[in-house]
Structures are given as structure tokens and as C-alpha cells.
Length: 269
Image 1 (cartoon, helix red, strand yellow):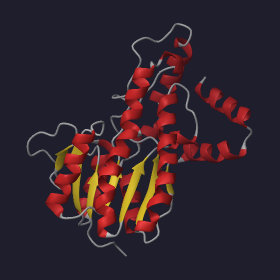
Image 2 (tube, helix red, strand yellow; image 1 turned 90 degrees about the vertical axis):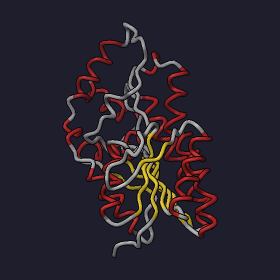
Image 3 (cartoon, helix red, strand yellow; image 1 turned 45 degrees about the horizontal axis):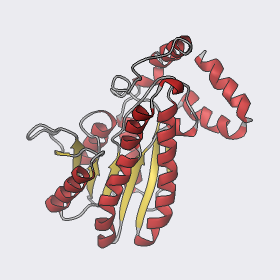
Image 4 (cartoon, one colour; image 1 turned 30 degrees about the vertical axis):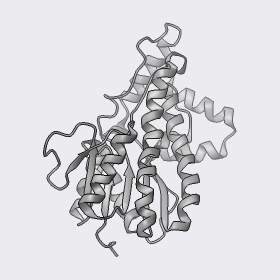
């Protein structure tokens, strides 16, 4: 049974997964507002508008949340989708570049949660969905800090869920695999790849770039998000992946650590 119409905020909704989620939820009758760092005047997707938000700025996040509440009078669902990708040998990623990623993928979601929680608590409930990744289940070679940021967001959400349950607020994660979006083109990269690491990095990126998983329609994830919003008792984690990505999560849990590492190394080499 569909849930009553809700006021939903989606960060990073100008394209990709966020846009797909917003379009589906707006079509279902919800009041959807998306965010973008620099929305043009009047920019939106027809079905829902975009408000300005930079998740790395507390002032920007607070102003956007206040605008949503002023427009709609409440805030029922927050979907933290905004994020960055990163690739490169761990050795070649500077702490400054890593910090930029973590500031968006982890602390950005935290800023949005902090701004939204007082309103949800005052209205007696709400739902926070943090979009993480199947990559948070294991350390992917040459995407070390991406895996680290998503694993950190998983643990953050787990703790947050326990803390806010008493207020009628649910917090959970959705772990997508790889979909047909522009995240690969927008990944952060180190300025210099060391000669020692370059052969392995180039080979792994060629394999990653040819992944058939990138052909999957982002609306597959949007359908799962819609089901979560309709659920009376949502689960703590939802995995939206197929094939080797889903199997790898199970193998990571049951195989000895070094055996799993050898399997990953063989796949990328």
C-alpha cells in the first residue's frame, strides 16, 4: 500500500541516481525537492525543483533545509545522495585530496542530518536514507578512499539509527552497485601516478571502465527507494546490486581474509 504523500529532500539531484530517484518519487505524488551546488535560476527537472546546497558548507546546508521547511512546512524524508568518486593508488592520493572526498561523502551527509533532525524530532518522526555503496563492504583496489568513505557512512548511519529511534525517526543505508551515471567521469584523481604503481593502476582502470554493470538503469535504484519509503518497518540496509558485486559481499563474509584478497587481485590483474 503506497505511503501518504511526503515531503522529500534529495541531495545531489541534478543528475544520475539523485535525479532518477526524484523523478520516480515525484511521479508517485510526493513533494520532492532536490539540491545542487549551483542550480540555475528556475532549474529543475519539471517534476521537482532544485535548491542550492553545498554539502561541504554548514551555512549552505542550514539555509537549504530552512528553505525546504519554509516552502513545505515539514520534512519527512532526507535522501543523502550527494557524493564524489575517487580513483588512484592509495600511496599517490594526498591527505588533502582524501580529506576533500571525506568532507563530501561522510561529513556532508552528517551536516544534512544535523540540520534535518530537529524538524523531524519536532514533528514526531522522519526517515533518513544514506546512499552508500557496495564498495563499502570491501577495500577496492585503486579506490581505497571511496571504499573507506562509504564504509564510514555505513557505520555512522548504524550509530545514528540507534540514537534517533526513540524519536520515531528511522535511519538506514542503501548500497547501490555501479549504474549508468556520470560519477566515473567526475572522480577525483591524484595529479601524479607513481611509476611503480602505474602498470597495476592502468590495468585495473581498463577492467573497471569496461564493466557491464555501468549499463544498469538508475531507475532500478529509484524503485527500491520508493519501496523503502512505503515500508512500515524498513530494514537497516538494502543492497541494490547484481552478479559478481552481490556475490562478493557474501564471499567477503565467509572466506578467509587473504583468500578474498587473492580473489580480488586476480579479478583486477
